[in-house]
Image 1 (cartoon, rainbow, N blue to C red):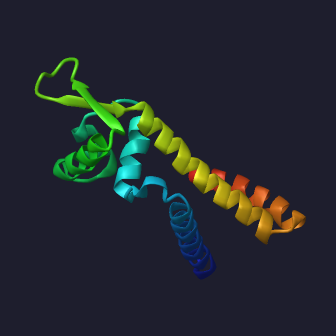
Image 2 (image 1 turned 30 degrees about the horizontal axis):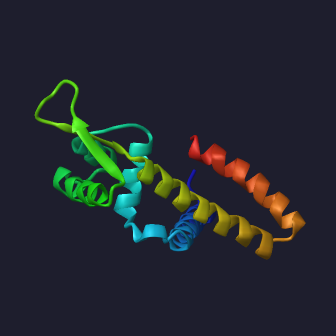
Length: 142
């Protein structure tokens, strides 16, 4: 049953997660990629894909994803190859520079968050955070 307290908890949790995401993105300004470009890079880290597949995965128009991937290609972060079975399409994959950029972005986020945990939370609060993380994992798997 959805009670007012649970609704408030859900609302506050969403706000906190959103704020944490914004703070981590701000900490990882390496290369000044847009959120859409970061998402496309992350998707391509899972394996090569067409712009149509990337667009479907992110619920955006293929034209928007083509523009995003085009900027990444110009920056040397992704490369195109012919589609193995459909000559009308191309498949995009990460370059070594794209993988390096993704690692740097993730490392900057992780460093910011680890430093914030160390600076703002005492030992007991850090242990409580570890317990909360386990609960959040259970929620994410629901």
